[in-house]
Length: 310
Ligand code: NAD
Image 1 (tube, rainbow, N blue to C red):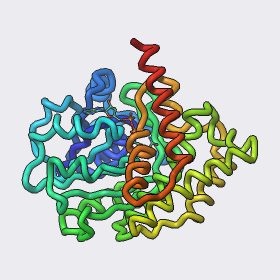
Image 2 (cartoon, helix red, strand yellow):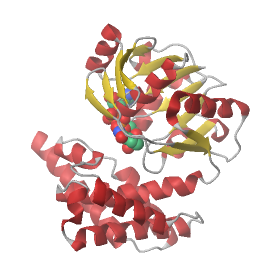
Image 3 (spheres, rainbow, N blue to C red):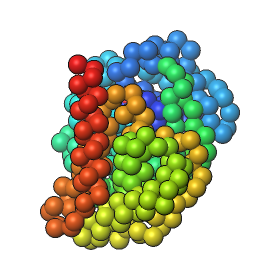
Image 4 (cartoon, protein in one colour):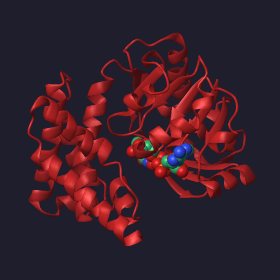
């Protein structure tokens, strides 16, 4: 399969590297010059449970330099860069190109739909963790899964091929008709933990320091689940809260990406997570006071960082 990954940071490089190791023709497309230079000079350093190695059989380039339309385009930018990234690779979207998003948050199908029809979009979630240890160097420790489905609910042969490729690359990938439940449960998990950690500065385990921490996380998750239910999505609030409690108990020292972004003075994915939930809640008349407050607070923190940088 010809695969292009646009947004080849931590997750995009992990997925692209694992697919390249299976013999697929992979091109990593990014705007981070230092990362691209390092990959071109020495290959992609992949540190996973399967070992520490360099993957050299892949391409790395900036968006205008990519030429061949792939069979599969994987979008792995942060959600706030999706629209810009897709415009940058619009010339690669051939008639047979399938587009996959496993990004966090809501609104990913809508963004991709500006460029390709619904029946060529694959949407899902992944629980694989990854971080960029330095230019050209990705680390991923632990286990994860991928659940995905065609955005119109009907998996076609070319899309089933993509599922098989991800599965064979060791990514534990399954096609799943309940993908929207998984997406909303992940949004609830992220809205709770990312949002609270971003505004409090707490690591995930520190939310267990006072009873209010977990109670607040549960309140946010319950609100998001109520919005999902109002949309007719059968998301499981209890399972989601169990995952939140487990994270608070075990993710010692973990700074969620939203906290990392705030600490680095970068814009966060708050609009695709809390912002999208608040907008959907308004449509259905569901009260989401905690989620709205977190949205407002993260926006304030982002604005302060913007002012400081200016
Ligand atoms: P990242 O910041 O490491 O990577 C994003 C990459 O996109 C960067 O390398 C950046 O240079 C690139 N980019 C930005 N604008 C671009 C453009 N216009 N064209 C091409 N490339 C562009 O982010 P990540 O941690 O890999 O996360 C990607 C997505 O996956 C997010 O939605 C995140 O929430 C989700 N996710 C992350 C993890 C994780 O453990 N890191 C796990 C599950 C889901």
